[in-house]
Image (cartoon, rainbow, N blue to C red; front, side, top):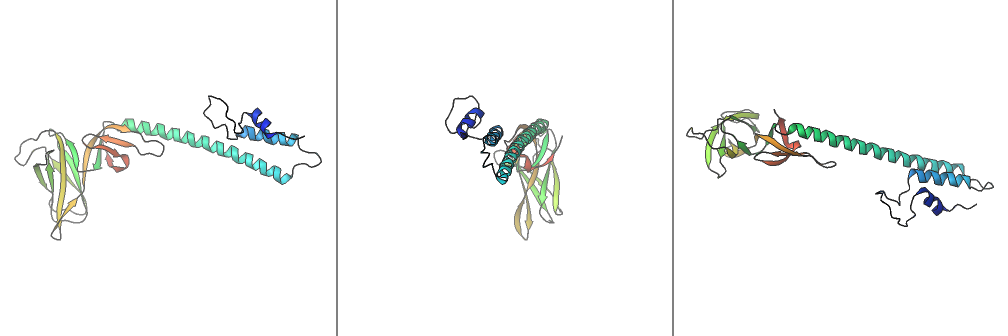
Length: 228
């Protein structure tokens, strides 16, 4: 007895290419594991007893079925892991809002009523260096001398006053660290604190982005230290 594959596909709910109205978002042209198994069983039931199916071919079909089921199980596991990672990111994001972080940047939002603590990345041993602080209009308000420093990081503290000893206004300020190497001026990186105001959780494989006060969006991979 001949087996009509289209009939089996129709009975299994799998389309042979003819579109049918449905509310399900799945691809109806894809052969699911249930339809595959139904095809295999139907083929065995209607095989020619005088010319039965070859054992090797039968084993190959079983292997295909096992592979299909394994792939579907793997997809389900990956989707579950992705969902767990998304939940973990959301939980991590909520715990970061309002906390202070240290990032490599030259700008910061400063509250002059509190001492401002920053760091300078020193590329090599230096005899002297300085940090120049400018306001939003580009005017120099303070110069902090670093003195002799070894390779690594050098801490500096700004008390929120200008070079005249007067308190400056709260706002955004730019920090530039420089030194002299072999008679030439060299700029150094600054590590400055900022407060996390909000977090954007990345999509699948995307990086979490932190929205920092006075700076803007920064990838979490750019964060050097997370404080209280």
